[in-house]
Amino acid sequence: MLTLQTRSSHETAELGRVIGERLKGGEIVLLEGPLGAGKTTMVQGIARGLGVEKPVSSPSFVLEKIYEGRSPLHHFDFYRLDLEDIEESGFLYDLDPEAVIVIEWADRLGGMLSDWTLRISIDFVSPSVHRGCFERAELRNVKIRVKDEGMANGIEQFIQRGKADGGKTGK
Image (cartoon, helix red, strand yellow):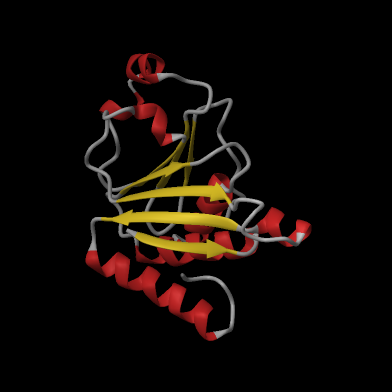
């Protein structure tokens, strides 16, 4: 598992872009974390890395949005659903094998999808870790479980670049 901190929504999106650039199509990316943690921001970066030009927004009320890029991006948001609703919707039974599938609120899936490529957890940094109110509001802990070694290497390079510029990107 890779663990890092992002210092801003821009840096969270940039991490998403790095991930998106390495996706080829056929991957499943699961995103978890509390409301407002940065899941949609991460998806916006992934979309940019895939060459999506349209603005990306949360599909909370429509459940799925599809974007065209170098690979199609199917963006799901299961915030308003429980496992039974997800199963009944049928969304996950006929996934496009050429598309990148990104699912926000993936913790609602239970064990429904075991064939994921990346599992990303984004959370707020505890107030006791950092004293500056404004800066603390932007800090996020990001944990990434990766099944692909090439993807892990690209993310590690992102972390190392953050360390080189004196930031707290990697830890």
